[in-house]
Length: 585
Image (cartoon, rainbow, N blue to C red):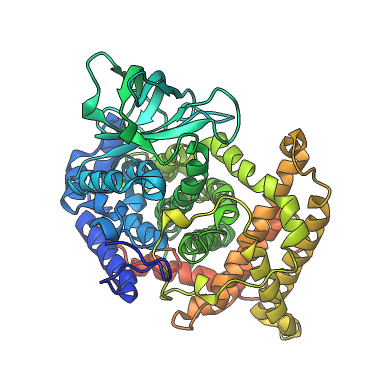
């Protein structure tokens, strides 16, 4: 079974049913994982925190994930799995990440990160082999090449040189690889050319069981401060032979494959770690409402509503990026990098705000009700790859800014409305269609058209007037950014100067605002809270404050309306995402 080039749909399936099927699987996983606050639940937060303390994966929950065949979520429908679209994949994984980011990586999307190169450029035989491996419940892991600003995960790499009888010999070591010791397949980005440049690396698909004796040494497990329950260890290759059939794509294609597949990885990470922050927000609401018969203390209104608005904004950004991978695959790369650049920083700031609300309760590290803060503070930097993750996003964005300023901004047509509408049918995710350069800037275009449609509302009053003023403020900031970007060098070391990197920060926040406006405009009215502009006004005001642009005062009742919705969701057991996902309780 193969995908259809014209539509991206898989013959014999009903694309309209993909979203319903993904929602059903997510709901089933949420129910199977059970009430996270039940101390007797083997998959609850108390059990997961205890496993984290022991620095071991939670065995009972891993067995459950094998039972529900979680790995099938990473295998395209055409190869017998459940993967249709990236946004639906993130939706099915959120119940897991809502409880434990480390478990989500260790028993989840690490395999996705590994196998993307095979879906993008692998042979039919490689795809079938990898699909069978995952559908049998086994694991794959990614062995990154070394990047600038490398942290432990990205430090060191392997080299591959041609073997006399054909194939290659892999040499080198890497100290920190997630699931190195228990993965059945290793997808290795190895250096095949000593010269720096876009053709320096190649990708190899290795069967862990095929290594001749003495060619592979498993290095000791590494203890990490974050994701302590995930299993990090290392590999040392000494002339480890691999056949010609292990090469994924062509020699020298590794960097291009990394750029194509990392945009999927970045977007999925943002879509799932927001669910973990949702758990911390629920803890903060619990702290602010427990033992109180009256309303929430006024001093907590701003942090609680601000974080809620930020989480909705993060969900909006991630949702649009994930949907763009299906709808606009050749043009999504810059926006995906911008989303990954913004979301982890917003979440980090959110955790600091929620720590103030939790107060002393935030130190109850083993408490199901309040311990999620401490764990996510430790896990989030690992999930986002820290400074190296930020630098890799900047390396995608900055080289594009001058070209976008010259050719795309204020001239491009806006993207299709389906990009922002939940329930709209989209093509299947096809890694082979993902672009890595050019393609314009559909999010900047979306911002301008949203602002133009809102302009007549500037004198109406209330939330809609504030939203119109904010849209115009971000448009003005894009206009100013364009003038600065036109002065950037086209290439060379000037693109790594601090002044250029600051522009990537400003750009990313502008397109983040565009995602919020697009999602708000895309509402069909079925959710009165999202259809009202209050949440969008608060979210955009916070983004604008981070940019340092003038923002209007919040309209009367804006904060209270957002707070009322937050309390309603907390009491009803609903998530703080755009879908208001029902939570197990």
